[in-house]
Image (tube, rainbow, N blue to C red):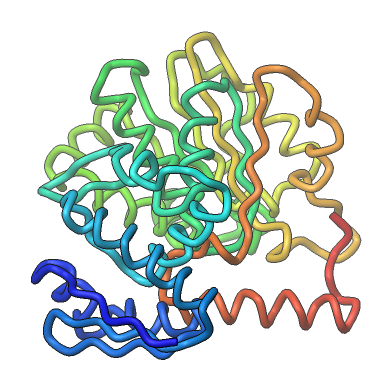
Length: 319
């Protein structure tokens, strides 16, 4: 079956953007031959596949006309939304944070559920592969909460697992010691705040970025607290961190249980915590899969390949 669709200039421009890979993603996911010439989109394939392609392109067109940019991951989001009879506009129109014209919003249905869970729950765990937006969305929501005065400060932490958190054995002052482990968190902050504003927040302690070891003995009130790379915590460290929760605070814990850097004999606190806290009210667990990866689409294939290899070779850790 062949069908020819006419699309608007804006939609044609989005589909044809060089390097975006949207058309390539459409061809990969829809099992159809898709050709764009000007404003004419020709689709060839079986009747069901062409019908599905038409529905996806209609949804993409509505998103573009609504002012949303589309990318390869949007194709997966549309397919998932159609399968589950959900309105994708509810996902894309949930703007978590804006900075210099950039809108930070969920890009998949799972990301939307994650954002909703963080808003509703005191403690949220996000577990899944790299590139699914676990930490980035949590940080955007934290910055938004700080801006709206819902919290008084943001605390971002990671275990410095490569050093076993024995920072005293590393050269240099404290900042120099922890910088390599915390640099990805700084990078995300610079994406969301002007440098001068971020520097002022850091100087006042309104935003704190510190290794997990520095959380011990504290009670954190009126704070949005994010523990990143939580798969590299021991059960004892996880318990220590979670019991830092104070009044008026919110906690988000993110990690990927397939990327554990702990010694083989050391249990991961992120794996264990699912069994311990899974049934407690006020705590949410959101699980991401390869379909939620929103980085370069090749990353999605790499994630899947490593997962398959681990399963086939028996090198996957018990979860």
